[in-house]
Image (cartoon, rainbow, N blue to C red; front, side, top):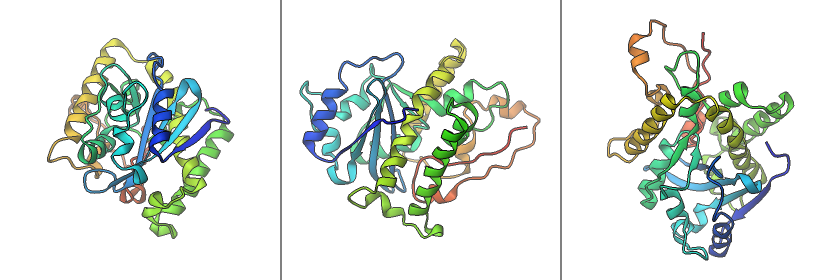
Length: 281
């Protein structure tokens, strides 16, 4: 993870235009764009506050203030006519997310954005396992197991995550609405940046271990997730989200169901990085 990335807050239309000029004609293999969303009850029944975009080749993180910009965050055009909506919907520009489901729901429900060309890291990790694929992992578990960060860097990543939870977790004296406080707090900016900065190395790790068979399975399952997130009966919160998509293993497995510890506080605030860090036997 880059030690000193440039983090830029995007809260004006001119700043959106500048961002768009900086992400044109980027490499697509490996992907250049890594994204995550934050909000209050993120999805159709909540709100979208922030979209963070890591432009890996430039070691640049953009924290896009959707709470302030509203629809103009996605409809403002850059010098070549491109918008963030057209980037997100492009079939030729790969975008990497960790669990696209609630992010897709929020973008589709509130801004009529139908994401395309998505690579879902959560599914990539699931596909590369040599043990049970019954349950998906959280980002924190993927970092713990597969990141090349040093022990000290992982500890610092966890510290930032835990300290930020005290800002938004009502049980720790926090407020879910902190993601809508302006100006954006420095701790929130660090939290947003670190979650996307770690994604490129995880993509390289998992992509290098995907067989052609499992690559096709991941692509199909990602498309299924997007279609599901846009459906009228999509439910964005709940234990069902822990179950992986390849249920043939569930039907044939004789292993007892493991106990998963969900971070329900994050789920209540709509932060789409739930943590059911169960122990796999």
